Length: 117
Length: 115
Image (cartoon, rainbow over all chains, first blue to last red; front, side, top):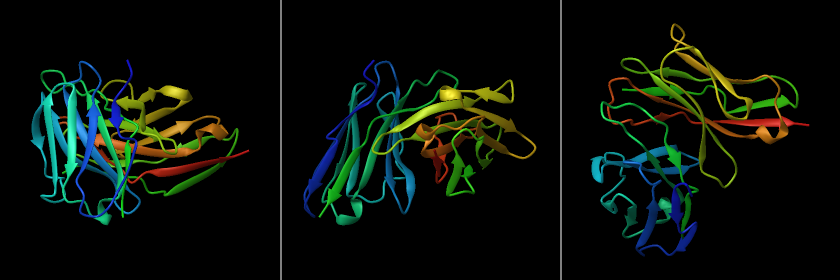
């Protein structure tokens, strides 16, 4: 398996522009997580999906952030409009969640390094 | 609410010496505990987990961790550190009452292994 795939790996954009980050989870995994990592705040959970349905988006910082999962093999995180403080590394992770809530580990993608100037 | 504390920002150890990275947690119910490692410009890689059973858990790259319920700790250990173990290590916890598998990550501990 190729693991979790994220694109682009690096994104540089100007303030006010729309940014779309993409994630392809591991085939067969039914939970997907979006994280943001910065030096100041560490690793923050933004939103997670189970069976393509958003379960908890309380970590999404502002209405400028939105995430979708139209099918089991694709998710997007969109920032519109982007601001310099959004500069961070954004990670996607996926997991196989069994009925009854059995816990398996999350597998992380390589991340997208976003720089907003 | 669940929380994780990694009390050391950085751990320095000489190659060949034992390595310990500390982690304490607070959760409702029985904990599910994880260790991840992050190399520069890479995503987090899973090392090991404790769900139930033996308190000593063995994982990848020669790492192990010991679950201590009375001390609410899950310290990561390696008997003999390598320079290539230099990386950022994260402890994570999921509370037993959380059915969705949401993890709370610690702030991370930078491990520096010197030759």
